[in-house]
Amino acid sequence: MFKTVFPLSAILSLRFFGLFLVLPVLSAYALDLEGATPFLVGVIVGGYALTQAIFQVPFGTMSDRLGRKPTLLLGLVIFLIGSIICALSTDIYMLMMGRFLQGAGAIGAVIPAMISDLVNEEKRGKAMALMGGSIAISFAAAMAIGPVIGGFFGLASLFWITAVLAILSMVILFTNVPTPPRIRHIYHSTTTTADILKDRNLLAMIITNAMQKGLMTVAFVLIPVLLIQPEYGFGWDKKELWQAYVPAMVLGLLAMGPAAVFGEKFNKPREIFLLSIVLFIVSFTLMGFASEGWQFVLGVVSFFVAFNMMEPLVQSMISKYARVHQKGAALGIANGYAYLMTFIGGAAAGIALQYAGRETLAIVLIVITTLWLLWTFKMTNPHRYAHLYLPLEHVDQEKLNALEHEHIAEWYINETENVVAVKYRKDMVEEEEIRAKIIH
Image (cartoon, rainbow, N blue to C red; front, side, top):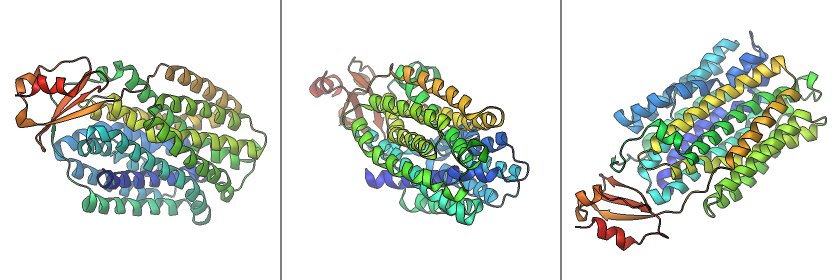
């Protein structure tokens, strides 16, 4: 599994590392560009996510029709062009165009779908957790590296690094990523957005994913501006921002491992999400009302610990709650809303900085995250399922089509390997009972 998932996770994490690399300092540097206002800076911080949301479904459809690899290549080329435009920007509008182009290469849902194609169902949760963990590591590393490189070499250097990472991702795509098998989904073979949104657990995960990503851009608009601008009382230099981000990175990484183990191995993701949301509330309280630099830094640390605890579990839980024929749609919807909220978070934070004080914004964020906490209490942890794999030639197709059991979640056919897979609750139904229902 690792050899299959690692190259795809590497492509996604390199791309996100490029996007994350500029986030810790982007709002501070963009304010100095010609034509900049706090609102436009907020749009730029989250701008890539708006085009991600718009092109999410077209790229998913394209990957179904033209193949995953050609779609990934096109997305990376667009991302490369956007990064180069950002690096060459001389005013706020050129930077905005580059950020929109960076997001237009919307491969965020194509890679999870490709992992779902390549990895067996029982290993898919671990695969998604590995992917989420790689993104979280990229996020944490970018928090430490971005402010240092940006402080010494300027904002443009970060975008040039991003462009190089896009080229490296293309190399990985064609040297290490296998071609996925063809999967035929028959059991309950149609799905709609309404089906996904009616599922309480899937809806909770869609909201969780959207809130986490939206709050991320809120934080990245606020943290550099609040620490650097003299009117907020801290008066840091841009080169000093690493002092806030490095402790956050280290503690976030330390928290990520135990959270992933507790969520996956002990099947307690709900408890991890609840604890993370509480930390988000703590972080906005500290950042909104801190009077000393160390208090504000503690708020930054709380934020990144919360974010990193969630990140390895979000995609995995969506994959577990969704049925096999829903996974692509569920991941697409979840990521689409997440990207939309990423853009809204940045724009809203920019407006708030322009027209309201940090205390008012903190109160609004505390109220929103508290409502999110109350909603998440409704979520339940996923059942543990086993999988039965049978050669297709041994299975009676008519019996398979008629297979219905309250403890059989679903079945599907892997046409590339000529295998029938049945997903069932091992504690509630015996394997031999299932075999008897469908074997010739």
